[in-house]
Length: 255
Image (cartoon, rainbow, N blue to C red):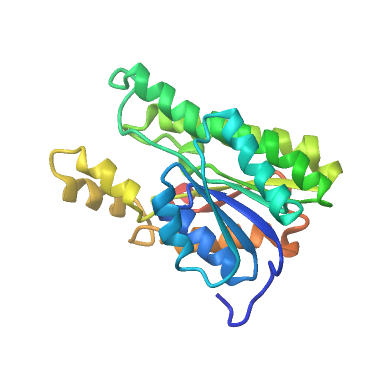
């Protein structure tokens, strides 16, 4: 980060899935640029640990993004305690490594509910609050899985593709209200999720090596690189970025 950059001074930001990985990195980056951050996660303890790393003003809120009442309560708490909402980061997600025939219906439901329904509910309740606060930014977490076919990721690709399409539609619906809706499409990011995915293979280290090998720049993407993009999208510098899919993948989709 550029020394002393404070593009988000005073902005009220919610980050779902803030307890680890990309969500943690986004929460830390937003706070470092002056934002007040709500760290929302199904694992409240993990969110509290991240909050303890932040010097600025924070709230910790336990939420299951699949439940409308819990997402509504999350947004309602921010509005009540901080007087409004400026930025919503719908980051919470899950993934399963499997082909379509090998994906269980339970895993299908879980991926669609957390990734797609969770993003939908985040926008359903956050967009009116952001509009009523004078406008702002919604940032959804898609993936390069929405843009290219990845082996052993059939339903994950479908879920992230749905997020991309919903992002574009909502961007058109709400730009007139001062709400910018965009998404980020990370490549393979070095997070605990990667460790969980690779652990399911016979040779986890070989699976991780394959992930690195498909990155033209020769390494996994760092969580802080995704966080930097999120901070940009949240800032006034991105006022003309509407309905965009911001790819941060080390060149995978350029091949």
